[in-house]
Image (cartoon, rainbow, N blue to C red; front, top):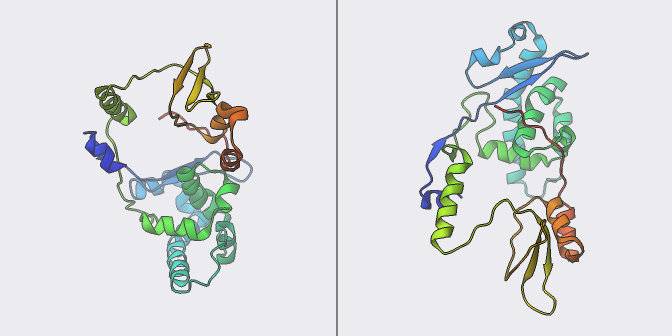
Length: 242
């Protein structure tokens, strides 16, 4: 992906991979902290300095690193060990506190994989811990700076648009696709737009989420397509504006 973007001449920059979480007070209390600016982020909520539960959570983050590395080393040196353990089972086995789960591990994972809390705990422990290790996410501070597109997505959208147009491609925008179906007795596909107009193509690529793809394919979806697309589960997420 990075190589493709660089080939298009898209400018890249290093992203800020810091982490922060905020939960408004309820019956069990709230919390707010982060790791982007050292101690000032750590104690974004000044009351944290007096909370023994908060300092226990920080100790558990260091413990989590050691437990994760030991777990991965054991499994990599003993391929016969069961790798089906969930993250929730791993947490329970090692006795992590509820605050560690709610104020650190679950938000970090949910932010990366857009998953619900229960979905995070159902993830493979081996997968999550391997990901954390391979991306240097096991430490409290100094998260890695990964490459990202400079000036947001519009910069590479314009580059891709220009590249396609230089190849003679015609780009249609603002046209809602209602359905995609096979041509009767011929190769190719019919694309029906919301305004009733139709286009025919040799091939069609659906660059949408699985539920939307199923809706567009409708009765045309094959058993194989239904099996794969229906297996993709989604949850509603709200991303607040910056």
